Image 1: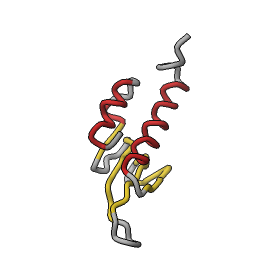
Image 2: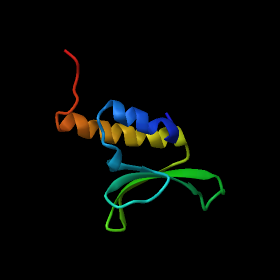
Image 3: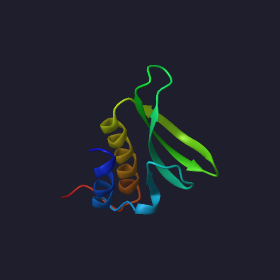
Image 4: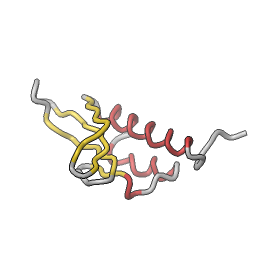
Length: 89
């Protein structure tokens, strides 16, 4: 999974498009962004909830796939918790 395929995976579990922003910061969304690391200059991926210009639940990863799986897991768990998806019998 990467930032290009993340939307398709989230669609599969019923997460609305307007809840996620890939590549840009937008209020009232979960954002996943590529950034440059201040340490070694390599790329990093940041995942966070943005509300009123402030980042919440911020996490940073050195691997795009790990960042996408992290966000997918958080949002899928939210779908399970609200009863939108569940375990098959």
